[in-house]
Image 1 (cartoon, rainbow, N blue to C red):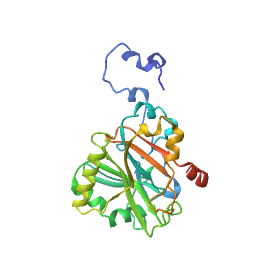
Image 2: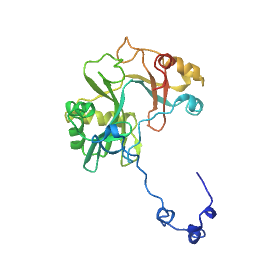
Image 3: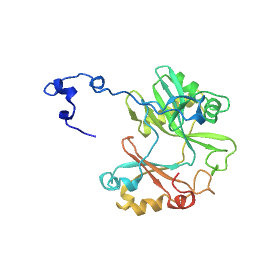
Image 4: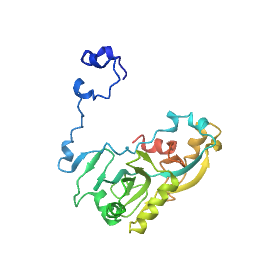
Length: 252
């Protein structure tokens, strides 16, 4: 929302000045944090950290202009797994694990913490020392009906967020972080990758890229939810959800 300064008489003294003053106090603006749902009481540390970007991708139908503006750019194409969002972070000595919306406390019964401990994700990230967030999908038994038919639960990484730079790492930098963490002892798998390609393949036609989203998932007998396209520098990304998946499961 953009409003003229004249709408705020309490800012009259600042209207004709170049000022670095913090106007939040003058306007009575405070940070609002969502209340913790009663069902999650005792399990939540805080809201999802503001220093990390949430794991939401825009659909290609909402940004079809990318098929033209990025037509000759190289994109990494990965399978979108049907699970739950999981973020593991280290920031200035503080480590944590998050769902899509919440920073959660460590409990013996929590699936995200169990998987992180089993795969040594938090300990190696802390030892690595960089302020990073590993973001991916936890899939398996008890999660979204387990379409991949896994025994137990596993974490599959799809992004690494550089907290200090406030941006996602490109393909090569992300691959280096994964390699470094594995060297430190992490058992870290990435989401299935179909390779790289330019958007010219789809001739600026959304229908063609939607058709391309159809196909097998991690388990070859399972139809995938869709695909995620990431420009190799990490600056542009979008998802393409399979129409077959939407007909079967709806928009989760």
